[in-house]
Length: 340
Ligand code: PHE
Image (cartoon, rainbow, N blue to C red; front, side, top):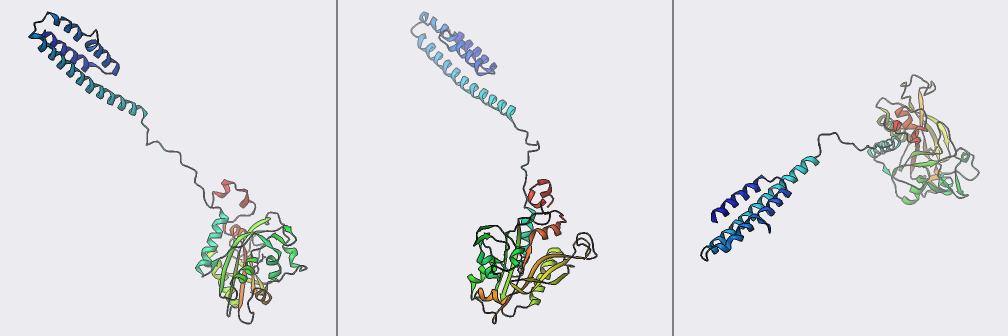
């Protein structure tokens, strides 16, 4: 019987080793160790054994069962590991495939220009101020020496919310607001980027556009300071060979006033279609702060003087990038915007 058992053990182990799936393992287990399994069958014959032999065979049977269970557990573990490996292999991802890149945005050309203007003036010692787009008539006009019946109001026809509240027509009201906030301290040396609104709409005018205002107030500020500041700006913005030209003009809040041109960036001043053969392009309005404006702002025109300017951001963007229709800047066509 001992030999029978030993033979059974060997056969069972051999069968276990041949298994490649968990199902097969289970079948082998049932075949040998199940209620009707081969081991049980052999043990049925124990009744014929002598008293002395019985415990020996019994413990051998237990030993065989334990060893079988141990083997079974071991092989089960191996098969499970193999199956996992195979599954992972099937699921594996080809990391060498090119991915789907997310579309990358970029700054709008107007934002780029505003930031460039800011950088230049920060480099010249200016700080940045802001003001409200919904503005009081007082700051937009009155405090800038433009009384109710002044003809200059026609040039800046706006969108009124009430007779005293409107969408600002320029960034100049922030001049008045800053003086009111700072008085009587000086120097003031600020730029003011922002949106402004006018009743205008064609290829070169939009009802909403951007300006950057400048204001300097200090002792002994002269016209030459304005000119030097603007020349430095033009050369940093458009190139070191840039020239500027100042033409007499009129603004109620500056006296004297000047319109400032840069030499044409397209033809270098020789004359072309863009500059209408003049060789010059207008980029901003400017002047020496009117004494009335200083006084209304809380400053003594006998003590301090100042200069101010206001430039159109769209116009500068169009000149810098050679854009001939302002509306392109607002249509948000990515084919256009991608070029900057
Ligand atoms: N605010 C003026 C405009 O919008 C420009 C300007 C600003 C002129 C400051 C002189 C001084 O046309």
